[in-house]
Every structure is written in C-alpha cells, then in structure tokens.
Image 1 (cartoon, rainbow, N blue to C red):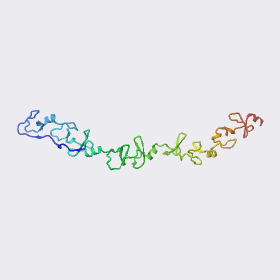
Image 2 (image 1 turned 45 degrees about the horizontal axis):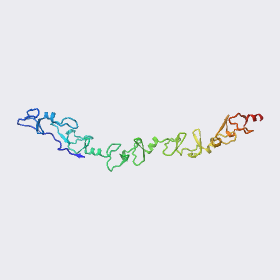
Image 3 (image 1 turned 30 degrees about the vertical axis):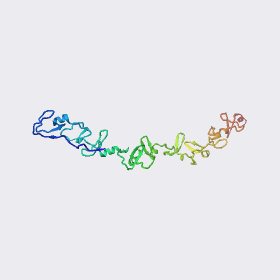
Image 4 (image 1 turned 30 degrees about the horizontal axis):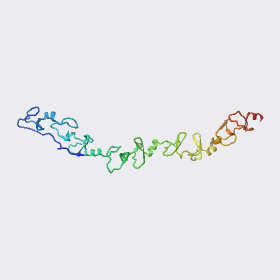
Length: 297
C-alpha cells in the first residue's frame, strides 16, 4: 500500500532570541543562539542532539536539529536515509510502500515484490504478458529455457531432471540410453540383449536385415542372425549329415575333433551305429568307428 509522509519533510523549530532565555537542560543563555522547541521546552541544539533527537530507523544515528526529519508510524528517518530498500531511490517527496516487515519501498518495487516473480530472472511477470506456469511457479515465456541448449521451450514438450528443465531433444541426448548398434538415443520402446539396449529397428539380421524383435535368432562374433541366415551363411556343417549345426532344437550338442564338427546324434559308428559321444572312437578316412568295429574293418 502506498503512503505519503505524515506532515512531509520537516525539522524542529529553530530561531534566535533577543530576550534572556536559558536552555531547559544546561541552562546556557540562548540569547542570540539557535534553539529547538521540543514538547514546549526550549533546548539548545547541543542538548537537543544529545538528549532529545530521534534515532534514524535506517542508519541508527541521532537526527540532529540541523537535519530534516521524516516520520511514519512512530519511526523516524534522516531525509537522505529515507530510500527504497530495493532500488535506493530517495522517497522524501515520493509515494512509498511500508511493508509489514518494516521495509520501505518505492511504488514500483513494492508492486514487483507483491507480484508473481519469474523463476529465472526474478523480475515480476506482469498480468497479461506471455508466461509459462509449471508446478505453481511462473516464468516469462522467454525465460523458460532448456538447461542444456538455453533456447526458449515455448510450445515444445519438455522433461525435467531434478530442478532442471530440458527440451525433449536435449533430454534424450543427455540422459536417454544409447543404442548398442547406432549409438543414438533410444527415445521410446527398444529392446535389451545381453544387457545392451537396442532400437527395435536396429536389432536386425546381419545378412538379410529382417527385424529380430520377437523372433528366434542367434549371435556370432557380436552380430545377430535370423535362424535361416545363420544356417546358410554362418553355421558349421556337420561332418556326418552335412547339414548346418545351428544349436537349435535337437542339434544343440556338438562334437568337435581335428577341425571337424558333428551333431552329437550324428557322431555314431559307421558300421554298428553306436553313439560315440564321450566314448573312445577310431577315425578311418572319412568315417568313425567304435574300437570293436575298427578291428573288423
């Protein structure tokens, strides 16, 4: 609320005398001297400054007889001390706001103090101006910026991290998981394989580029393959049946020997068909035999 000073700037009455007249306190003759009339008492300026002067609410020093004094609600100021607590504008002849906490402000600063303040620049958000309100806080539209790129967000979507605000591209770049294949942020969806995140569109067969999300696949040397391409291009061929050893289904166990591989179910004696997995065997050219049959060949 704005006020004007009660009575305006003033000083106590001072004058000179021609008749004998003594100071109320020190009894010095005031003839030809300046004096102050205080509560119907005549006081020399020295005693006034020492015994009667009010204390300035700002600088805490006495307001002497030669100083101009301003007062409001039983508080007193030197004229030069009566300033806005925010902008320090002299208020001796200006409207002012007296705050409940005792602070004195000019009208402009008082209005700013009472208004909604921008969380970025701390200036008042004027009614009718372009602004952004979020979680009961307010910003000027141009002050509501991305923490990373510093650009105004305006009508874009945004995300938060702690107290910081990010536009969607900066948030994704800084915080989103990166695809193991293309190294770009995964903004939605995605899949995980061997504790690594992938875009669904990046998780494809190395050979035919068919999407593998939700499909059967296998890996080889950090690349992934659909079942058909793995059989055709990557899998070893069984030395017995000549078909791919894929590791799927019935052919999960493999026997390796001197650079050759067999399905476990194919690693049998050529003559008696005894399974030789985890047993002694004899190689005879392209064939394998159990020890008994090898003696008969």
